[in-house]
Image 1 (tube, rainbow, N blue to C red):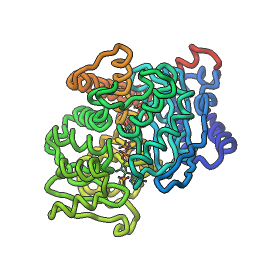
Image 2 (image 1 turned 90 degrees about the vertical axis):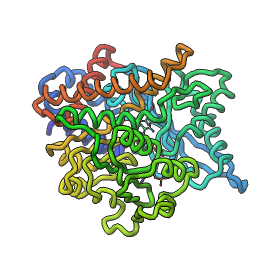
Image 3 (image 1 turned 180 degrees about the vertical axis):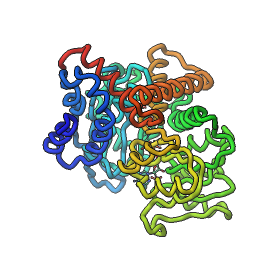
Image 4 (image 1 turned 60 degrees about the vertical axis):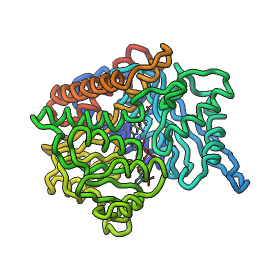
Length: 450
Ligand code: NDP
Ligand code: 2IT
């Protein structure tokens, strides 16, 4: 049995029922085979066995009182996966589907994504199985305060720096930061994605979506093409999706569909971003409200789609941006996209494609940008926020955006070159996994057995 299979087998036994985590590990290990064959030192130092094991996992109770006076209890997590390249860094997710395996998959991906940015960032992730939908501001605040009352002792500006993810935006970061400050008495850069008046960076909220579009543009430019004039679809309608739509429109592309957990909006004339932001960001509402305001837009509810939830991928496009959640794009969706002429799939979300869809897309001739490369602009700009906090300065939007664009260009070069080096030219899944891993693994060897 190959070395990587042994490790996976051992993991399945030692941490059962963590499907998304095994999925993320299996993909990386599959890509690494040629590197591990060429460089026996990784095996000698048992890097694979060490890198799949988080340095530390913190599981905690989050008790809080809802507006009816009822006590609620949730599970809180912070997985500090790797501090090899810098402080643990990665978002916090509030979603009812969060469990230890989800947080571990996200933390594992984060190690390699952060390495690809070229910045001094370790990897971590956190979250809670808390559903913010339908909760009042006061409930969100009490939940965040309870969550931080445990988390504060594990984080710090040079230790572990959380940020947002699904269900955690500027509002939640504000409540978490307020509580951290109250407990520690210290105004420091312990979280990123902060509000602009209290330590935040211009461009952070836009960065993941903008970065994903810059990455797609790099992939297309390498083929003598560009996004201008292209028809695009973007799944999701949260932070990443909205800013993907925004940057696509700035670059002259037409976005004809977006989605949320209730269904898909198809708007052939082009999505009205102002209305979309009002419905999803300002009112925190459902996407079907968009279609009721726009007579030429069609809403396709989840229940109407026989395959279950993937109506967006059947809408013909030149480029698709999966930007909602994990495993939202199956092999059959990927086939449909390509049959309809799609030439580019660029992942704003973490692990949005199922393993067989990843294999199919990576082997196809289209431009396929895996999440750990394509959505790294968010965490990279978090590091720019950390730099600004450390130097007590605030850069202009133009300055941040210029750096983001450079970073995305650099990531594209790095992953393309690594793919080429290992005989998989154009396969950016292999390129991203190899380049991210190699940087961390070499540094682990330098730092000894820890
Ligand atoms: P948000 O909470 O802002 O938005 C999430 C969007 O995805 C919403 O439209 C939501 O629908 C939809 N969604 C969530 N879960 C599901 C589901 N199970 N099925 C269908 N749709 C779903 O999160 P973000 O935009 O921040 O995150 C989106 C993705 O991008 C995630 O994979 C995240 O890990 C990744 N990411 C985020 C970064 C960031 O900086 N925020 C950085 C890098 C990656 P609804 O509105 O109905 O809830
Ligand atoms: O998945 C991710 O990269 C994020 N949610 C952002 C992490 C961060 O620390 O900015």
